[in-house]
Image (cartoon, rainbow, N blue to C red; front, side, top):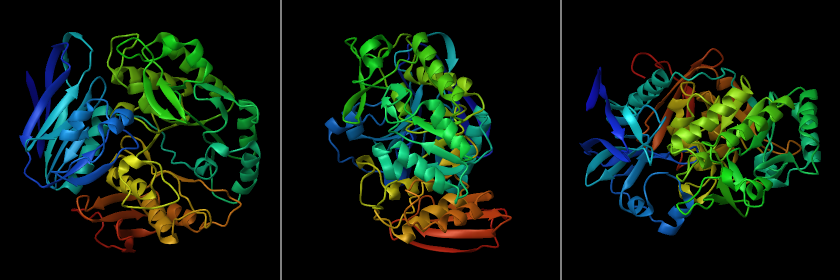
Length: 508
């Protein structure tokens, strides 16, 4: 049975289902436009415009390893365009409003847009309503903002209104960070308007064994030292991931998501190792998650960057026969309750299932000390791709969470970024009122004038025009700068910044 709620410029559709539905088709419509805006299910995936006859030029083997989407098989991905959660043309937007049990996605197939929800192997004794789908008509620039408002109103997320400014160790030190590096940058950080000082990957014994390695002090000393310098202590971890070399893997294989044969299933590969996923439907695993985050919180950490979260949502056999999405949300709910009012930054995360559990969310791939529009999205970090997603997912900010565009990289050496590229990133992040974190060795010479520039642009109303175009126009209005707009083309790297008197006067 189909349920329809009429809107002023569209409708919301849902159905009632029961039993073991698997993949449910909820919508179909002829695609009339030649270009579409597609979206990937998690933080690092793209939101970008592609032609409707776009073909993926990557191998099945790569897709099997990458697992960027939990629903289609590699053959399907090679044959059809897939877009998770929402898809749009210049005058229509199709967007699911939640992902609490199933995974919603779209296929472009035989000239049509088809909407599906995958409930995997979960079975329902009684009727449930499917994840609702909004179908909206109008100008895409306006529709994206309206879609964000519908997501907010449907999910009613609560998150901090504190929009952090800070420092992170990752994009200069990576896995080579030492405690001496931490102490050096703590002393230098007092010269900047940082609130958070966050230690990234490198402090832990192993992925899954979240205790400091021998070259780092105790968790309590780490947090206490950061606090003594006047900063909110922040720490990185990948709480749903388990390395094949960890003690957790060796001692608790029963805690892991399994394949069809009952063996632990590889979730992804990183750090030169196979990485497995915790089964978040297992009560013992949830107890482990609670103990872990209570220990970090009791040690004095108040800002948690939780990464590679998609691992918790991979398909597979679990302790309970529930969907990967429902299991993922059990894990996120446990973290949220345990750290209570501390700040949670999600990263590498399924987007819609995370609503309500995070305060901030990475909304693009990792940035990098280089900027190249020619590098495909599936081939790793890139400042270009990070900046593009900062713009195309801007409508999520302050409706679902605070958007994290990833760190500003401002160093003048050991980088291929030009001052203009750094400027484009800083101005965009500031105008869109994003989180602002810097990730450089603070002893180096920096283009640090961009920090106050970005901060001066924060805190206002904002809007993006030209989402389907080659160039974007970003508008903002706040008490510090008045009404301004920024015209930017990511491919040519040309931009113009100037006051705009018509900002937010009815149509924009």
